[in-house]
Image (cartoon, rainbow, N blue to C red; front, side, top):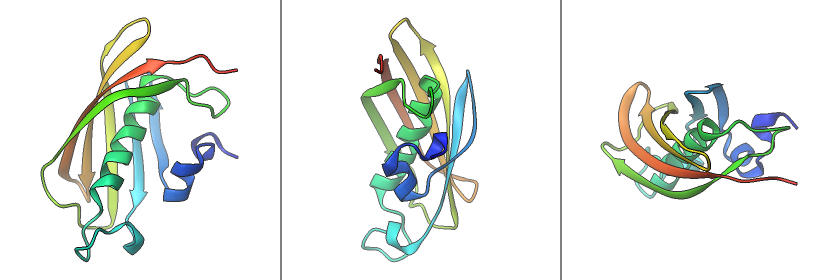
Length: 128
């Protein structure tokens, strides 16, 4: 299984890693009807929050052999507009990096329009 698909939940949703480096990560998700909330055409807020979390988590610490090296300590998201369109993307950036904690931000866009802004704290973990 490819690195970005090692996380079964991300694979199930269809999240793709577009770009990742030491400064952050960009992820994308093609919008489909099974991701809508009860309002036809509007992406469920949980999907938007998940995409932001994935971008921040991947940006906080590089995966090793497809296994994440950090976990979410806390996160906050502000929804600015309903996500309606064809492509949802989240781009994260490292705000502060300590020895064990990393502070991140992510901007979520839908077809290029900013729909949400998130911040999060991530902790490095040792994997077996």
